[in-house]
Structures are given as C-alpha cells and as structure tokens.
Amino acid sequence: MINQDTIVALATPSGAGAIAIIRLSGKDAIGFVESRFKSVSGKQLREQDTHTIHLGHIIDDSRTIDEVLVSVFKNPNSYTGEDVVEISCHGSNYIQQEIIQLFLRQGCRMATAGEFTLRAFLNGKLDLSQAEAVADLISSDNEASHQIAMQQMRGGFSSEIARLREELLNFASLIELELDFAEEDVEFADRTQFKDLIERITFVLKRLIDSFAVGNVIKKGIPVAIVGEPNVGKSTLLNALLNEERAIVSEIAGTTRDTIEDEISIGGIGFRFIDTAGIRDTKDVVESIGIKKTFEKIEQAQVVVYLFESNVISNLSTSSKTGSSEKFQSVKIEIEKIKNKYPQKPLIVIANKIDKLTEQEISNLKSEISNVELLSAKQGVGVDLLKDRLLSFVNTGALRNNDTIITNSRHYDSLLKAFEEIEKVKYGLDSGLSGDLLAIDIRQALFHFGEITGEITNDDLLGNIFANFCIGK
Image (cartoon, rainbow, N blue to C red):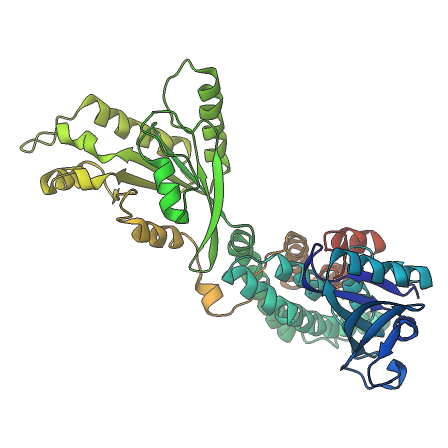
C-alpha cells in the first residue's frame, strides 16, 4: 500500500465558502507547488523552513488563478511524515477545481478516502487505533464522543495496550528461552510474577471490554422511543425536547402516521428521540402501518418513554383509590404489557398535561402508578427533569474520570479474543502446563494486542478502515 505518488485533495468541505484548503503530500509536493506559485516577496518554497506560511499567487502559465497562502511542512515533521503543502485559497468552486486540475496535469494523483491518514500510519506518525480516532473525531457530534476521540487520538488507549503487550512480550521471551534449555529443566520466567502480570492484564481487559457498553452508546447515541395512545402529546413532547417545531401537532388523533426522529445532546451525551404513531385499534391502512413501525422502533430503542394523558385520573374517586375509569385502566394495562414484553429496557412512564389536574388528582395519580413522571409538554414543565432521568441511564462515571473507553467494535472484538487467550494462559499456569504449551496461548494474545495498534495488520484490513474516511483527511 506504500507508494511514492504525490497526492492532492480538497481538505475542506466541498462547496462555496470564504476559504478552501487544498492539500498535497508526497516527495514532489513542494516542487509541484513551487512551479505554480509566485511569492509576493520572491521566495522559493524549497528554501523556506518547515511550518512557514507564504503569501503569493497560483499561476497557470500567464494566467493568475487566485491569491493564496501556502503552508509548508517538510518531512518528517508533518501530518503524513512526507512533504506536505496546504494551499488556502478563496472558496469558489471554480477556483478550487482550477487549482486541483492544475496539479493533476503536473502529475499529482487524486487522494483516495483517508489516504493522508493512511500515509501517517504507514510512516509511523500514528498507530492504527489513533488513526481510527481521527475519523471518530471528525464525526463526533457531542461533547462525550469528542472527549473519547481526543483521548484515543492522543494515544491513551494504544499506550495502555502497548504497555501490557510489552510486559507480556518480555515474559514470552523468557518462556521461549526456556524451550531452548528444555533438557536442563530450568525456569527463566518467575511463575509467581507471571501470575501477577496475568491477573493485572485480566483486570485491565475486563475494564476495557466493559467500557464498550458505555462507549458504543456515546458514539452512536441513545435511541429513545416515545410511545402512547394517539393525541396524548407525543409530538408536543418531541418539540419541547428539541426546542423546535419538528413534528406537526394537531388536536386530530392519529396525526403522526410515520416515525419522526431527531437528535439532541443532553449533558454531552447524544440522544435520538423517535416520535411514533399512536397505538390504538384502527381500520385506517396507513395508520396501521405507522403503528406497526411503532413496535419496530420500540424493539430498536434502548429506552422507552410511555406517555399518557393525565386527565384520565379525573374520574378516580378522591375517597377511594380502588375504582378507576375504563380509560385509566387501559393505560395501566398498556404499561404492564410494555414492561412484560421488554423487561430489559428502561421504561419511563409520563403523565402529560398535568396543568389540567388538581393537587388531589396529582396525589391520586402518584399513588396509582409508581415512579410516574409528571409533565406538561405544552408548557415545558418537567422537561428538564425528564432529561436528567434519561441521563441517569448512562454510566458517565468513566467519562468523568477520564478513563479509557472503547467505542470501536474492531477493538472490542480483538480485546475479547485477547481476553480468551489470557484466560487460557491463566488456566495453564494454575494447571502447571509446560512452557511450550503456555507459549502458544501467549503468542495468540500478543497477536490480538498487535491487531489493535496495527503492529499486525494486512492490506484488506487497512483498506476497510480507511475507506470510511472522508477524502482529504
């Protein structure tokens, strides 16, 4: 995958804007730009120090394309480890394409997706987990995902894995040495110290593997399904949470016939709210399809919010809490159905439109349904408390403590496999297995550690990882 081509690409988003940045990397990057750049002070780019910026014009023969700033980064002190030049030009689509086409005609090649970062990895500027964190950082859309990506890009995760791998490798070397002196029956690797190391590695691997549950949620956001009967205020609640008129609100029951989704950040964590069609018996074909989708979204959601209209309590007797209206009874039955069908999913039961209730009716409501949340979506009452309740379902302790959190499914898979091999090593030590048998499992554990940081890799894996990058990064 290593080649000597000089590559070029637009490093800023495509489209018109105030400025655009065109990036070149490769052994001829400075020479290509120098031949088409006329400095206002007459400087030659090759003679300039690394990490310097120069004002001038990009020239195509006698035609001036644009006035630009050219940034020079000389190898190995650049992002890719090669000579890199970045041209800051005006953000016209025409100017961008004219400059890129100019360098393509000179012999540059268009960069493929993620090729600049791939070169950084191949040239030892980043390890593989750090390179993957670059893509996560670009796609981060809330505080938590940004924090995790920054920590990983700075090498927090990979350095932790590298330390464990190095210690394990040292012991592996001693055990391999024992095999060379098998006839003398000597032990170079202290088995007590080795057991302590295996215990420590097991502890760290468990912590990292367990962190994936939180990390995956932070990276992808938490899907929350808002369900209930028609016209209880689901769309109004969605609008209140998003603080915008995202869903159509109407007095007509069954207005929402398809799911509406949108995402917000609460306490730095992304939540994806799904407003669903009201659940009821209906002969309307379109509404029936919407109700079917509601149950599909409940299956996909990690948290379910069941909303009902609080004024169903108004028919309850203030002196007796045993009798209830038929409608209120159906609400309680529906809550139990959801609990029984989805026992693993957190369920938040919300009584909406509490502004229409008396204090006595609110008291009756609380006594009839345990842990009910009281809310008025229309007036925004209780919305902040609901957000706090949603945030409580996410274990942000590791995030607050700046612990390493795994968000990448490839890393998670390699950690699981490494853990499995370490467990075999542990069993072998406890059983007094010979060094040659221990060495087999240790080698496999080291292999899976190496997969994470890229010390062990192949072209197919790299192609798959960097294909998900944007072009220009």
